[in-house]
Each structure stands twice: as C-alpha cells, then as structure tokens.
Length: 315
Image (cartoon, rainbow, N blue to C red):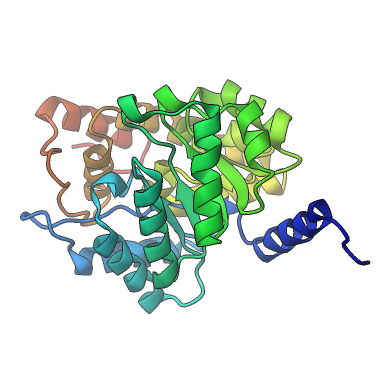
C-alpha cells in the first residue's frame, strides 16, 4: 500500500516504533545509584546491583530515575552507568531516566543516553515550580525531545504540580516516539482512568508500589517502580502469576508487599530504599547530598515491617 499523505506516513512510522518496542512491558526495575562517601559513583556497587536485578529475569532496567537519584546525576554520570550496564549485558533493554528542567537540557541528556546505548527514555515533565508550563508547553517539550532524539519515550507522570492528564496524554500519543506513560501520581484511581482513556493507544505502566497486584489485574502493561528494585524476584513472580491467573498465589505475595511498602515509602525516598536493601544483605552505598541519613526511629519502623513480612529475621 502506498502512503500519499502525511497522516499515513506518520501511521507507518508509529507502527514501526510500536513493533520494534514490543519488549517494552513487564517488570522494569529502576536502578539505584550507589555513591561513595565523597558523593562519587561507586562502580563496583553499581555492578553488584545490576547483577542482582538481572538474576531475577527482569524485562528491562531503568537507570537515572527517582529511585536512582537521577535529578542529581550529570550527563557524564548517566552515560557511565548506561555503559556499565551494557558492559555486563549487551541485550537487556535500557530505559534511561531524563529529569531536567529545560527542553534544551533534557535533549542534551537524552542524546547522551542514546549514544551510550539506551533503547528508550523515561522523561519527567518540568518540575521546578516557576518553570512549569501549561498543556501546550508540555506538548512542545515532549515533541521537541522526540524530534531531536528519535528514541521511544515513556512519560514519567510523577510531578504533582505538573501532572500529565489523560486528555493531554492522548494528544501526546500522536507523537510517534511517545509510546507509554509511567503513572506515579494519584494512586490507583488515576492509574485506572489513564488505562481506560488511553490504554488502547499507549502502554500504561504501574508505579503504585503497594498495589501492584491490583494494577496488574486492571491491565497494566508492566511496572516501573522502586518496589521492583527491592524485591525483584518476588515482583517477577507476581507479574507471571497474575498473567497466568494464579491469583491466590499472587495475592499471597501482594499481602507481604503491601504493609512493607507502606512503611518503606516516605520522605528522603532514595535513602529509605537503600536502607531496605541493606537489611536484605545488599550493599547500596551512600545517598548523594543533600540527603544524608535516616533517623533511628525510621530505621526501626522499616526493620520491623520487613521482619513482620518475613523478609528478614526479627532483630
């Protein structure tokens, strides 16, 4: 069939992007970024964390997101992390986080990630209050990144003061490179609304950590969330069980995850994740300043919740 107009050409381009990214589903953990005491990348610990996630048979990996303290990483550091992943596994799909407060900076970071070997981008809307655009500005932001970089884009819908609505996401899906959204704001009701309104056109990823089972049952195309990083093998099992309608087994996993995650979630999120990993016997390194430490009270709460769920022994 010949294409005689722009609309037909765009359809073909978009179809190619969709087919070539059929891998974009399932369990996609965000990679933490271990730092040393001076705030530099700890490459040995980064390699160790990558190995843990790959061993769990994940579908893809996402460096440079919120869990990975991506807003604190410069372009060279993100490139180095992607290069390390590629050195360990040539085939694992990489969805690179892009958290920047200008279109120019986002394009620069995205191009660096592409050159380093990223397969797709997870791009956060502008988050700094005085720079937050309206819907037209958000559309132009993603359109310009798409046209300049040419990689598939998953929108990271996480900014409370700059939420991407289902209506705007439908428009954004007209951009061939925009293939999905990670729905992090508004809880399970917002996830369901996004799935109902846009699920026939784009991929909807869950980031409702404590309610993974429910979002999987509601038709999530997968998950990109911190709980996958802490419990990768368990979350892979949960995904498979729901897909295979082994719902009783899946609910048993969900019950363990729910109360644990309600305790882990909170302010200074990356260091809370790192402390949970430490309790599991992993070595997550230090957080990057200005995050510095958790109080003993917060540590005790996380430790108790993980012990009650059977993830660690009681202290």
